[in-house]
Length: 72
Image 1 (spheres, rainbow, N blue to C red):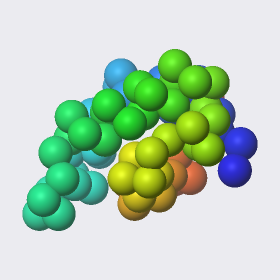
Image 2 (image 1 turned 30 degrees about the horizontal axis):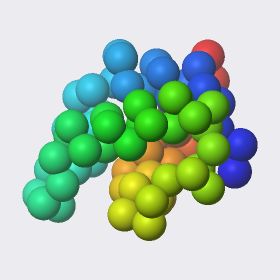
Image 3 (image 1 turned 30 degrees about the vertical axis):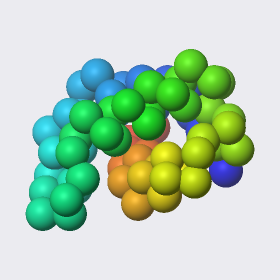
Image 4 (image 1 turned 180 degrees about the horizontal axis):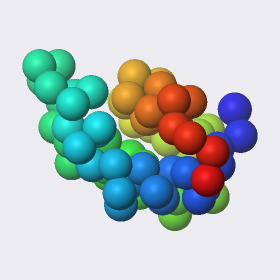
C-alpha cells in the first residue's frame, strides 16, 4: 500500500478525535497510534521499516482511517 503522506499528516494533526474514537476500548493509547504515524511520516511512508508491533497498529488503526479519509 502506498501511503498518501499528506493524508497521513492531516490525520495526525487535524483528525485526532477520530484516532481517539477508533482506539477507545481497545487498550491502545491514541499517542501510540500517533507515534506510529509519526514514524511513517519520518520514513516517507515505508511500512516495511515498522516493527511488527507498529505494523499491527498501522493495520488496525491508521490504515482504516486513511482509507476512510476524504481525498485532500
